[in-house]
Length: 322
Image (tube, rainbow, N blue to C red; front, top):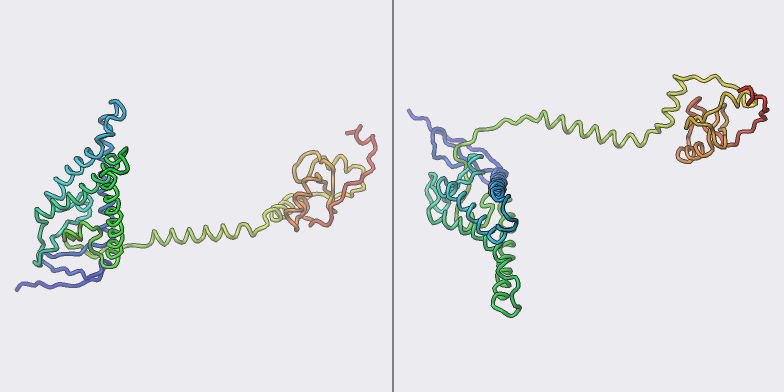
């Protein structure tokens, strides 16, 4: 007894995916992202081939390939087309993703290869269009305004504009329906399908969850740090772990004990106090007090009361002893 049953999955192609167990001819629609990834892989391959081709002429006189660049690019693209679309009905990017083109004009349920006419028209619509766009820039330069070349250039410009507008509309339809991402595919009636049935993939999101958690925590820290008064926190911690033996301002030994600014660590310029037993430069204490209205002494953590100049009666014998 032959067991041949099918099951259905809903995907993002705008339709249903029908798999038939034991049937190699089952047609599987391709995901939108897979079709777009195939195009990106094809562009990367074309750029790689062109860069390798250019390196063969790097020791020649510069500018020799400039006049023939559109034809050379078209020739290389024809070579890729000959060994991909013409022979396998799939581009290199599609082959890497297990995708191939199907003759959508055929009403048969089984997979049908692209016809020879479709392959030739595909080359004309893709390679020929790129060659015409690049070559037309040189054909119509330095031509008189009233000549037939100018009218042809104007006509080609209108056609290109309409084609780009139609391509945009076709891409919007593709995002909704999931079929025919390019005008050439819709015009030729070729559709991308998987070359073999795709199994259900189990995707783990542990790595993504860790990344989201870390980014969220980093954004929270970036938002929180500006709200913290780091200067006051630093002065508070310094006062706890580095206790200072206080002394009276009226002591004659203040000149010898406070020979450095509590902020910059240098000899105080225009010494001022904030009500504690420590001395500050005028510009240091003024700038800190303006930027932080809750400024506290970094030595003893006394909050700023008022900034006033230091007034001491210092005898010359103190300096002589020092």
